Length: 293
Image (tube, rainbow, N blue to C red; front, side, top):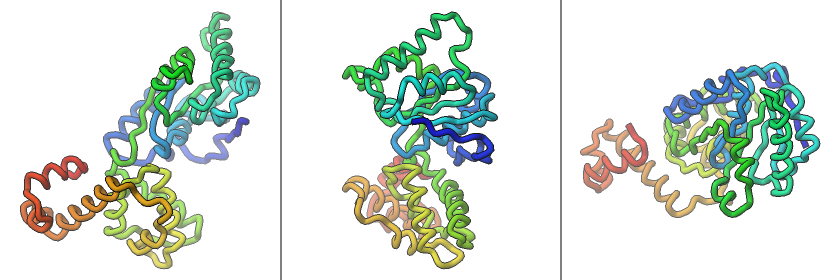
C-alpha cells in the first residue's frame, strides 16, 4: 500500500531532513546535492535507524520533484499494479526495505522497467525511485534472495548512511533538535540539555542509531519538570528491558570514565591517564579509537 504526503504537508525544505555537522553526514549531503539535478534511481544503504527515509525526503525536496507527492511503499507489501501506477505519475517513490520484496514480485518489477526501457523512451518514468535497505544485498544476491538485475536498476546512485557511532559529533546537534521538537509537542519549556547529559549520550552505544536517540530524547522530555534536561531524566527514562551487550557496556563505561578524567584534568592526558590507572600511550590509543579530538 502506498502512502502519499505532499510538499505542503511537509512544510520543510530539504535541509530540515539532514541534521548534523560531521564529515560523515556532510558527505551524505554532497550526494544529496549531486542527485538534485537528475532523476536517477537511488539506493540508500545503512543500518536500521540511520535515517534512510529522512534522506529520501531530502533528495525529494532538493530536486525537481519537490512540488509533487512523496509516496512510500513497504517492500514486503509491494504490489506491482499500484507500483506501476505510481511510477507513471510525477513525484518520488520511496521503497522501504527493498530486500523484503518477494522474489516473484522482484521479477515483475524488473519486467516493468525492461518493458519501458525497450520502448526507447529517453526517460523511463515520470516518478523518481528511491529504495532503502539495512541488509547486505550482495549477500542476498549470492543466496538468490534478491535479483541482481533489480539491484542494478535501483543502484544507479548508491548512498551509504553511517551509523550514529561513526558520527558522534552530531549527537549534541541531533539531541538539541529533538529537544526542541518534543519540548514543543509536550508543551515543555526546556531551554537546553545539561553538559553531563550530553556527555552521557555521546558515550552511549546507540545500536538503534538516530531513531534510538530520538526516542531517548522524547522519553527524557516527558520526565523532565524543569527548564534544563539533566542527566537524572535520562536515567529515569532509560529502557531497562533492552540492556547493552557486554562489549557495548564496556565501551560506554570506558568512554564515560575517559570523559570524566579529561574534564577533571582540564584535558591533560598525562594526569588523566594517572587517574584512570593506564599509560598515556593506551589513553591516546583509546582516544583515537573513540574519535576524541
